Structure formats: C-alpha cells, structure tokens
Image 1: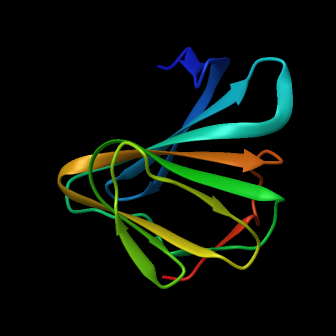
Image 2: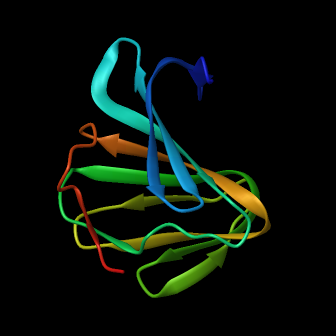
Image 3: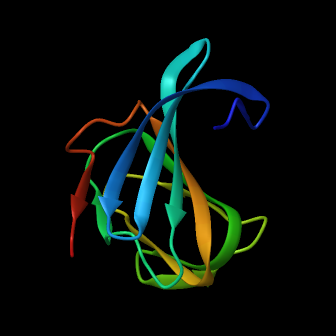
Length: 121
C-alpha cells in the first residue's frame, strides 16, 4: 500500500474490482479533500472500460509502470515515465496493458463519485 504519492501523504480506503484483469486501489490525500487518487493495476493484455467523463472539474490520468497504451479521445499513445493527461467533461479514455501489465493513476477533482464516468463498452 502507498503511504505517499507525489510528495503528499495518502491513506488507503478500499480496493475496487473494475472488471476482469483490472483493479483500482482508492486513496485519499491527508489534509486535502479537493481530490482523491486511484492506483489502477491492469493485468497483461487487459484493458479498462472505455469511459467518457461526465462530471468533475478535472481528471488526471498518468503512467506509473509497465507497458501499454492510453487512448484519449481518438488518439492512441504509447505510455512511458512522462505520460500524463488532464481530462475534462466530454473526453473519452481507456488504458490498455501490454504483455507485462500496466499500472496507472487517476486523480479526480473533486473526489470520485458514481456517475462521474460513463462506460462506453
């Protein structure tokens, strides 16, 4: 479990099964209730649902480790250590893991709640 992310203290909340091969560990930031953090682990060859952002002021998607792709709207990017995307309402997204799996993060402003994303597949 993480104790710190990008220099800020975090506390583990729960683990959510997103779909087969995809789990999300949910964290909150100490002394910052404006956002929350999801660490997404994707098994080799698996992918997150394709989602459309319906709510929130900002959603930050970033690469942590492994290999794969991030699809933002209609563009597909091979991910690496510097990959980070800032999404707003109306954007679509999907993570796809390569042969070694993939781990990414998601920071939601304000914190995630049901209805933020629409699964498109």
